[in-house]
Image (cartoon, rainbow, N blue to C red):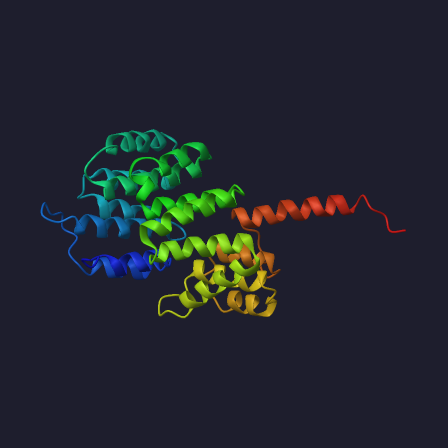
Length: 286
């Protein structure tokens, strides 16, 4: 099997090592070429990495993709515009791009369009449309679409469907870091033995040279917390300088965050804490 020239770029992106991913992808030519899709694919990961930063570097993402006219470049540019302006007009733009790509010869390009469209639909609260987008056409065999679908299903408490999606993804690329990540996400949700597997996965990432990214540290700390390793979880958070939304959410759960965060996890904790206090107030000790 021919080696994937973007293997290291993808690994860094999937580890949430976005700055390292930008540096690695930028080390090769990004000039559009009719004979190779590599410049486009590298540029897409650079742009997506810029958008994954906190806050997103939308201008850098748009400038990176300006030389390209492929549907995938248009989709990522639409996401950049959406994040910059919170403008729902870009939702219709990605819908049109999904239709444009359907049945085309470039399944990889369609996969990118679908995962970006799915991302925008989720941000808009259009979960049913996101599921449809991620499970049709090239989305069926695209690991990134599968991974986003697993995250969405877990957020909807459909662990059964998430597990089914993960099993289908294993048949596509069992050795992929994304497939291992899906297993880890499900393990965090399931607890018991799968939780230990999640911890081992994040521990392996944690020990890599570029592994201690905010997303990995937050998941590593969450694994410790769910396993009852409270001090180890606190140490993970306290030793990290970059306080991303994910880290702040876990820190708040540990009682370490002094300020509120709008991360969904933190908001969910706030809501459940308020509900508990309300219920507790109805009981008077005998």
